[in-house]
Length: 385
Image (tube, rainbow, N blue to C red; front, side, top):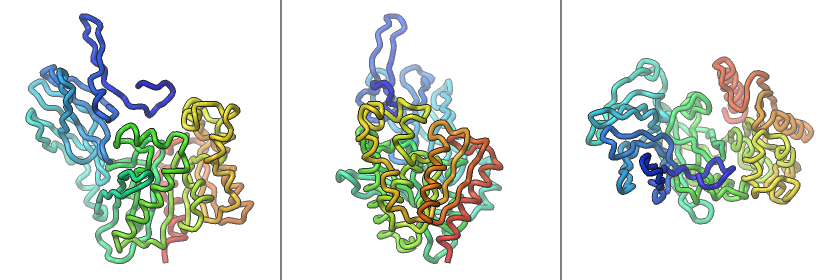
């Protein structure tokens, strides 16, 4: 990475000659951030992973020229282990299913090796997954996806999922937290948008959220939801709930004050409520300061206050479920308590769920079950007819 204290800077592969000590950038001309790295069996290329438009493929990087070739198509590839005779073994998951093993042969063809969860997945209702794109903020092309159950023909209420990071993506991948397929189980359609700041679209797109937390990302979310509901008549535009954690939780509090008439309900998990308090409370001071102008709060309060949800509480009106955890030092649980207090003082229907034994993520299986139960219960209250 080139810029200190910026955790989402582009990761460039550097190649060092061990005999001479000379180091040169290998992927400087490729506008993607490289994740895992492994030498191919012949020593002439690298097998790497890097996000690209809601996917994370395996790529081959030629060591002599830096030329990049995509080797896999959809889904989230990881754990690439090159084979001596060429090719590799890797894992792949998607929004449809968790990891299985695949073999990539020397000519770049993928063959599935395992189907570990076949019997369990066969018990789930069938779903469809589709990507879409639209013109978002700054007239840039912005991507999103829609997932919905296929066994129903009626109108579907919407779970509008907003990812955290903010430099990240929900993507076509499997997760045991914020799993889009699980959100379809009660009969919801999932819509998610990779707003400005998301990863997998080039570094300029990721950088665009800098000093812009409540600006272009909110515009992307508004335009993306409007696009999805206009192009799919099965989506019930009038019955939607917005949900997000971390930066997504911040966006829930921002939506409360800056898009207050759109949603029937909101679910806010570990989100920033007061940027001033956050600037002194978080254990990632360097991250918070980078995101709001690379200065401490006291040197440039206006940069933090411009996008501070607490300044718009008088416009709040949407029923909100607030979730927080007492071991969260990233966005301390006091932020959640303050948001809940604001909702209560304004007489807005609200509910507070606190996990004493979790951190910035809900990781324990029993807690996860409770999390989904509370979230679905809240959504059902406001979306089910």
